[in-house]
Image 1 (cartoon, rainbow, N blue to C red):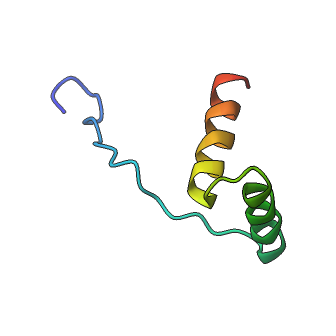
Image 2 (cartoon, helix red, strand yellow; image 1 turned 90 degrees about the vertical axis):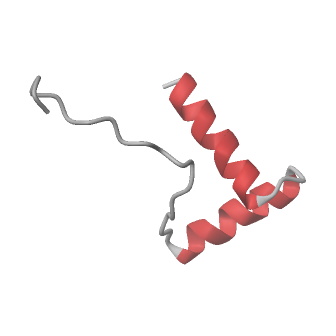
Length: 53
C-alpha cells in the first residue's frame, strides 16, 4: 500500500445471501416458472440490476 490504495481483492464469484423466508419462497417460485435454477435466476436478476440501474 505504498501509494495509499487498498490492494485488489480477488473475487471468486461465490457468496452467501440471507433472505427472508417469504422472499426466498417467492424467488424460488419465480425461478421455477422461468425453468431456471435459483442460482441462474439470481444471477439474471443481479445482472439486470447492475446493467440497468
